[in-house]
Amino acid sequence: MPDVRLEMLEEAVTVMRELWRGGVVNHRGRHFTVENARIYSCPDDAPPIRISAFGPRALRLAAKIGDGFVTTRPDRAVVREYRRQGGKGPTVAALKVCWDADETTARKLAFQLWPTEGLSGQLSQELPMPAHFEQAAAVVTEEMVADAVACGPDPERHARAISEYLEAGFDEVYVSQIGPDLGGFLSFYDSELRRRIGDR
Image 1: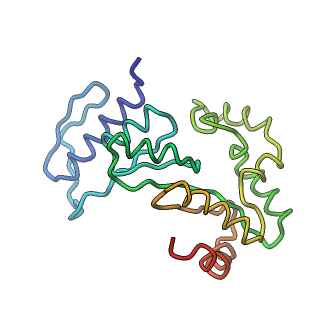
Image 2: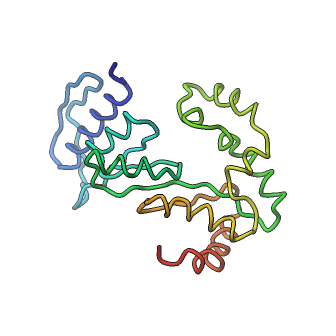
């Protein structure tokens, strides 16, 4: 059975790419109608469209139409499957951490701001309404989030979290700080993580 959301995504990417070529775009598709649309300041090179993929059908679509794919789990098999299906663009991982000088504070903050990190599989991605995410997160504990997210000031824990993605074969790993202390996070990563991870 076709996945309507993926059909919509594929059609949307088609429209976006047409708009980035310049000129007036008219499109009447199954899911979208665009009339007399135009981007007046197109970039010299169209931005790459990397497709977020959390299941096999989305991964097939990423390999088919994407300029890369993005996911959040360090799964070597997914990287291999993307390549096997013809994916040419970079494989990109998005990783959340919660740095703080105090681990207890970091754990509480990660649990408060991002409890869905404690959910498994597509449950943290595929719910239709914010209320459903709140209901799912109600069963998550601080311990579950701390198991899923590198929390606190231990550089080895953060390095291990990143290394899992590098060892799985991802080309790029983007690390996001949960919480407001971006200065402390960036300083910690610059002073403690750069030499542990190196140029990998």
